[in-house]
Amino acid sequence: MRFGRTIEDRRGVDDPGYEPPVEDLDEPSIAEEGQPLFAISQAATAATAIGGALIVIASFLPLDEPSGLFSRVASNTIVQQEEFLIPVFGGLIVVAAVSSYLSRQRRASTVILSILTTVLVVVMATNKSNRTLYPLNSLGEAENSGNGTVVPFGIAIYVVGAGAALAVLGSLAMYKAERIDGVTEPSAVRADNRATKQCPDCAETILAQARVCKHCGYRFA
Image (cartoon, rainbow, N blue to C red; front, side, top):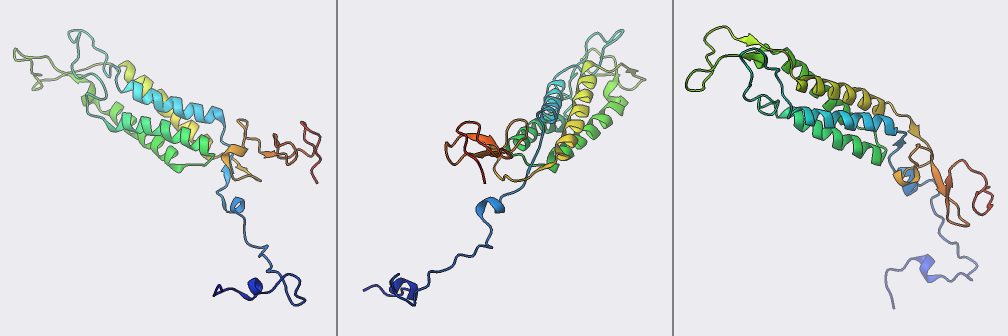
């Protein structure tokens, strides 16, 4: 004999006094509890990811443009100037953008990273000490006791600036994406951000707003 059974378990369905338990129809389903999805465009994602990639690439390009006697510049990259946050932020921007697009979730972190990177680039570009070069003595050390020469920007500044601008514009467009109603699973959203559903008759995937299945002709109520 099993103990702890409820009255509904002990009564048979043929018992005149038996009433089956009523499910709570107001309880939200799993689908309703899911996070909302957003129509994040491929163009905005690509702009953000490309911007982040340009930031990383620029970190290894010449920061200063040698001129005159300074035909060769030592430590002439963003990384060699120990500005490690710039390439790190660039890589994080790429990861955050791709993750946001795949999950169809808006991420403020992508915008924040893009803005912080832009601030770092502006601070680095306006710091003339990064572009002030001094002649070397016989020991190979810079003679910085006198006036140095401020050289023009190298290609790294232009590439990292373009990357930061793309990342900011793209991340803002991603964050302003409109909400997609009717679905809670990223797999139910097409590349063009149109929601889909599965036909109960033939199991093919069709648009969520379709009233007739184009594969089998099933009509939705």
